[in-house]
Length: 480
Image 1 (cartoon, rainbow, N blue to C red):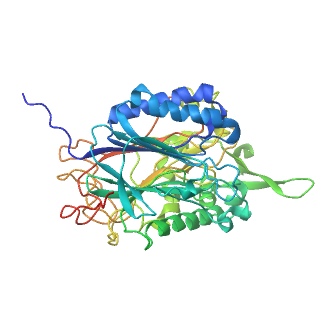
Image 2 (cartoon, rainbow, N blue to C red; image 1 turned 60 degrees about the horizontal axis):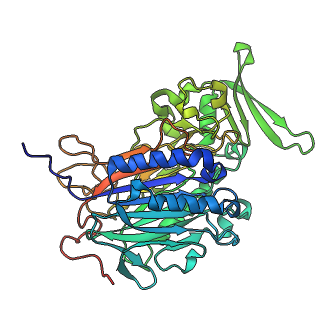
Image 3 (cartoon, one colour; image 1 turned 90 degrees about the vertical axis):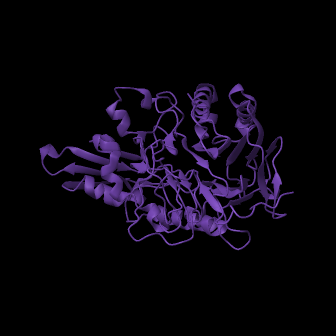
């Protein structure tokens, strides 16, 4: 009996993770994190793999340098990665430069079975064949194989510097050229401020920053290619709308600081039922009494408030999700792995949905598809969740992660299969004719504490010439 034919195309795995807490408690967290990451690699067996990290090195990069070196060495030399004989690692270690430091880390691994792969030199404007393993750090601004920018200072809330920006690389595999963008957008600094308006002031800042990145990707300096954007987007649900919906029949009590008269807490009580507290809202606290609303049916009742990406509906496409939202995890209390979760603990943690209101973390896998306009009846599937923030810095519910596709590609996966993507029949493939899943969008370590964020991944296959409209006619790469 003939064996099953090998799947066509090149297997690709894209992973994104905010890894700040791994360096705050490396002894307890890194082993679990790496084990779960290697398991995903083993399961999907990618030939090309990208790992985008945010907050790389933790809150104090200088104090974590030894842990950073150990983490990088482990990834490059472990038995689980021994078949990846080429690698590129880009670490922003320039922590002394407030104007440039982003704490982003981008890792790219090439399997020995992948014979020809090229990376774009943005200064020479030509592709170069990738050989060997190389690590670049410190001043990435002078590295020609990437583009790195920190957002302009006037983009930052109150013009206060933080580690937010993006790194872009460009690759060519089997005549398919595409950009990979590691991004970290701004979080909601206060639930109380975010609740004041709809959309929130923080949402507007994120929109401005993401628009800046997308404009840079498609400007006139370089040829336009497909692109994937995946990182920490910090998207939130519309906080004001969520609170008003959850507390429709409640009365609000405002608590102010005695010395400054500043609002420090909002308490929403039921009109009857002994005026029981329904919701307490503070700068870093979103404590809602009925936690089931965030768990039932994967929290889909809240999707109507998931609005942040809609501004970019003609530029980005987001894949659907199949896993539930999860609470934040404290390294000492892996709540996600406990069967009987402590209700009070959940109330004092952040529930993260595929992006949402308040303080969440977002991942967006943006697959740039064709530049044709989106069909009028096309709708965006919900985004995807990611674990967000620390145990005692809770935020309102959120779907922080997502998979989005921009506009400009031919089929990314194998022909003879169908998919739903943003604006053309030449879309990302989701299933084969036999219903065999060929695209997987999921999180890593569902039952293990992975730090205060869950990594999220997208696994799929690229067909030759998928990234250029006419790549089947002529090669897309000019190599050196």
